[in-house]
Image (cartoon, rainbow, N blue to C red; front, top):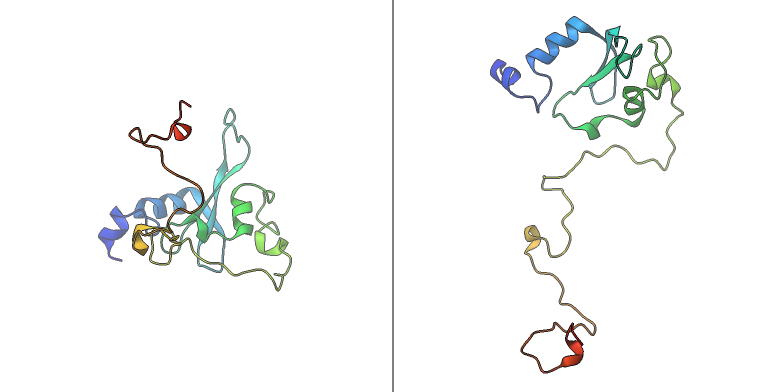
Length: 151
């Protein structure tokens, strides 16, 4: 991606401003298997702030800004479920080994060709199965009063 892309696009990685701010006000504490980097603020939140005394945490994505790209352990770290501190409190050191039945990561497919499209979706032709059963649509012209909503 060229320099103009880094200046003007926020949806595909960090902009120049975000990278500059991260270097100036934070420090990198780790990275995950997808190449995302995790940062913590150099100064804690000031008194009077709802998170006073805690440090700000953020992620810089390696590619498209998609929150489903954050593994569960780092999601917990970002939200403060893993305690403060830089030594020994990073997510990888606190994780049990993966279970054999655990599925690997799959990116969010919404808006892509791989997105789930049920029968009847316009992308699959827009034809759904005919209604079955005893349903009969009421029309004001019909003589059947039992089907009338006023009956």
